Structures are given as C-alpha cells and as structure tokens.
Image (cartoon, rainbow, N blue to C red):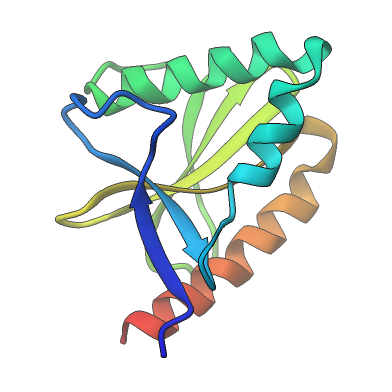
Length: 131
C-alpha cells in the first residue's frame, strides 16, 4: 500500500499554468499543519500570504528573484527542489514532470537546516515509493 499521495492545493487558484499540489503521507497533508499554524499568527500571516502569492506567480510562469524563489541543490535528491522565501517564512516544493509543483512542507528562516533535512528524507521516501 502506498504511503504517499498528492492533492490539488486548495490554497492556490486552480487556473495557474503549472498546477500546484500538496504532498500527503498516510492521508495527512504535510503542509496543512504548518499552514494552519502561521495563518493563525498575526505576526506571520502577512509573510505566509506573501509566500503563497510568490508561489502563485511562479505557477503562472512569472520570474522571481532568488531572494523570493530559488532552486535548491540537494545531494541525493532526484527532483528539482525549490524554496519560496518571504521574510521569516519558507515553503519547500519540488517539480514532478507531467504533474506540476508539489508543496512538501513549510518552515521558518531560523530552522532552515532542519527543514531541509526533513525535506530530503521525505523526498527520498517519496521517490523510492514511486519506483
């Protein structure tokens, strides 16, 4: 039985040129907990909303500077992985050919190393399951 699935993101309009999905593990959306936490924090909400706007722009093929959207070079990861940045907020996603961008998780600027290690582990498991 597969642990991973993807669901079309309800946080990004569906009419974007590149579809945005969210990764689920055992039926649980991995991005939801982070999203719910920051949406309820008035100090973080504007950064979260800004990061989601950046992601929507990227999904509509708009270029963004590396200070907002950049590829990550992760050893051992077979997908194109990206980081959306808006002040304290980070959103990590990857691109799967013929599917679209898939949001994996979110995090905070001061926890990037931990978040990226978690991201690498999730992507390795996801890739192994797809084989």
